[in-house]
Length: 215
Image 1 (cartoon, rainbow, N blue to C red):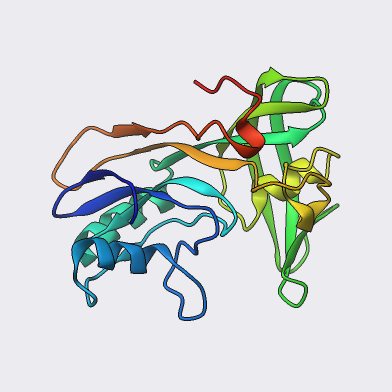
Image 2 (cartoon, one colour; image 1 turned 90 degrees about the horizontal axis):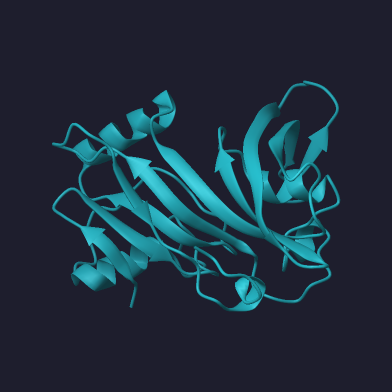
């Protein structure tokens, strides 16, 4: 079963569970398979227009037609499709509100992404804004707005500043829990509508988020 937040003939907004691929996969559990099961249609079209790391969870939108997929993809490319995340990181970022900008290089052999000092072949610029919403002695709950959508972007940019996300052993976390990364907000325009809609879903109060009053 999958939690459906909104659905019509063009799109489906759902909650991606942690541990599931956001794309079709024959070797791992994936959200498109869950959606086809939900619709009781094993051959249904599922258009992937944005992605979320396997270990992360939260809001995703899928197109149910090729026309809807093209429209949403145009919004992603044009910068009118907005995503906002909540993450729990080790330590307290300073300043507690700001911007992170890096060049990131994806090493496909190691299946990891690394920050590098300057532009080079294969490197992509990564930009995000963050704000500390709550903090404890050892961790911070941050709101993150992405301006670019690079692989593992939030995880790498926080980890490179010595604030790895909780549960992210791949990038240096010593905390054993599910990855502390949740897609909380999507803003985009639905097919056949003229004004953008906002979808918001707070994370469950478990794992990395258990110590915080998420709103």
